[in-house]
Length: 112
Length: 113
Image (cartoon, rainbow over all chains, first blue to last red; front, side):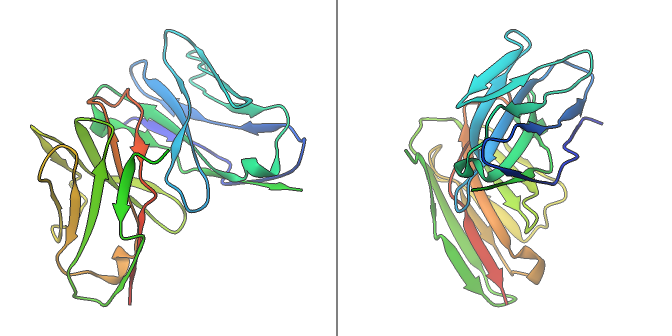
């Protein structure tokens, strides 16, 4: 069946470090891909959305590229800040809303 | 700017009680959802509902039921809570279709003693 894999459950960095969160997906079609971010005490919110039409998403200094060849959608940021500490979810979307699949989430801790 | 409102923020109750959580969205969306988030932050969809169709995740126990008065409101009732129901319940809305962005509320944290 369809799936999303985030291998890194927890990432700890210092301010100004480079961030890379690995995400791979498995499906038989070309889905819409999302990254959501959840700050403490809040619900998840959209960080990036990428479709097959545009391939790359950039928002708030974060970047993710839709790679159909390797079925990956990694999240990157050149220089993290303490305020980026949150849980990041890679999400596979489908025209059928019930088939939206959330990855397990990556807890990012950025030390001052 | 919050557009999906959930009440209460927290609820503590005892095993066997009935609880009800409220959710309202002001975005004009036609589809609403309930998700369960466990202590490890795993998110699982429980229900998807628009004014035409309710879809229930087959793994959801029957003591859970969604209740909707109109497309802007989707409440969640738990008939007789169990300890494993302790979690954060997140309400979300979107335009119809999983390719559209989900907008979440801040969640209701349930603790079952």
